[in-house]
Amino acid sequence: MSPRKRTPSRTGAPTKDSLSVRRARPADREAILEMSKRIWGGHDYMPLVWDRWLAEKKGALLTVTVDGRSVGTSKVSLISPGEVWLEGLRLHPEFHGRGLSKRIHRATFREASKLRPRTVRYSTWIGNEASRRIAEKNGFWQIARTGWMWGKVRKPSPVSGRRATPDDLDAVVRFVHGSSCYEATNGVAGVGWTFPELTRRRIRHLLSLAQVVVLPRRGALRAVAMFDIGKIDDDVCLGFVDGPDKDVTLLAKDILRIAVDTGRDEASAMLPTGRIADLVRAAGFDKWQPVRAVVYELGARGFSGKDEPFEDVLSRTLRSNESDVLDVIADLLMERAPVALAKENVRDFITRNFIPDTDRQLIGGTEGFFLALRTDTLRSILRGVIEHFHLRHGLAGDALSATHKLVSVRHRGRRLASLRARAASLHLTLGPGFGPCFPPDLKVRASETKFDAGTLDGASGCYESVTLVLTERSHIKGATRSIDMIMKSATARR
Ligand SMILES: CC(C)(COP(=O)(O)OP(=O)(O)OC[C@H]1O[C@@H](n2cnc3c(N)ncnc32)[C@H](O)[C@@H]1OP(=O)(O)O)[C@@H](O)C(=O)NCCC(=O)NCCS
Image 1: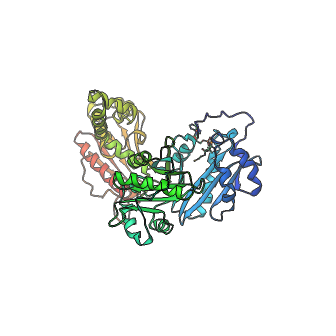
Image 2 (image 1 turned 90 degrees about the horizontal axis):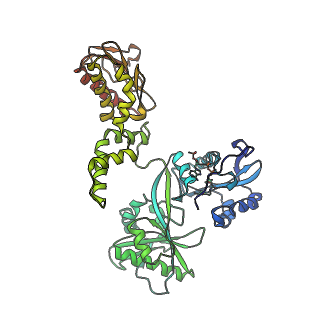
């Protein structure tokens, strides 16, 4: 887990072509365990799991080979129906930093897709740059940040809480699903570095094993803790706890008592960073500084798709609200800074460091086109149209490209609009490709409205594309109305 240096490619070094990924075989054992000694300073857990992983029927253990030599692994596990967990990604350090993980990832995904996944997740150490980069490049999104902690067990003594039973199922599920701990982890709970979903089914399973402790001992639930036994360290791992501070502390201490009762001399906890982790640590899980973990899930949560990617929706929203976002962040920083600051400087700091200065990009990007225009009226129309794309629809930055003769605005990977300069007019063409949204009796201010006959939709009688000839400042309104129409159609289309 220590930070690694990138290994420069060497002449004659293995290439992607000499690499292959296949199902693991018993004969890989020696080479893989040898390789594993070189990972994380010899603290890799692979020797503890290899035999079990190889024997597992569901999922797949993969071996990476370079020129036939076993040099890496990847494990695909099914932790409940539809719930795929990725782990065990390893490559011999000799081959790190050469882009080989792409092929391993592709093979891992082929195996994962055979399991008909509803969700695919994995976790990693917060400082594992290669692993996190792989997540980010492959469509995984962070759903939780947690701290891994260990505590020395307490002397045997009675627990404060009550072991809940299957009769408590409804109450426990209600409590868990409404808790801040559940919200902070987006519904997963750690057992070591694996994070299964806290479904009703899983809670029922934990209740059947008497691994749920509640407070008070009688009456309505005020606090709940759940633990499971880690598959790698065979540890008692506290993966969920919530309730008032005092109860969280009592339940964390109970887990340390339960661990001693089962003959262990320590217990672990994997909990969301913040209040919960802080309380549990202070209750005795303070053997080390917590190790921070990130849980990744494929696909962005709470995003209902359409055909515009999550990132594009957000970046458009950010750009069209840039000024408000800047204000909010600036106010927060000024409120919390230890000294008085001038707001304009703070806003400038934010645009330099975190948020694109879209105004600067707009002016800079279209400057050549702007200067080539012959009249102030045309420049004014250009500004009005371009600013509308930016301020109302967030189309700026990468969405915009300009030469001296043409400004293009792209949306969802295709050209949505183009602006061409003539001696005394600007021609704004909208569409096609975003649906038939311009009625033949379109009434917008422009000196001319020309439909593209080839884009007439028989069913609706509307056109997909129109060109407006803009000559007066008053035509900006006509242009912006037409832009709103095509954007509405683009957003409504699936
Ligand atoms: C994880 C592992 C298999 C990745 O293999 P790799 O050959 O190092 O990865 P790659 O060269 O394909 O790099 C993957 C990405 O991470 C980036 N990366 C790799 N090492 C990096 C580093 N030290 N710092 C920053 N970025 C790094 C690469 O630039 C690449 O991103 P890019 O495609 O945008 O350029 C390998 O590093 C490994 O075995 N690590 C030890 C075990 C481990 O941490 N496993 C993951 C547990 S979750």
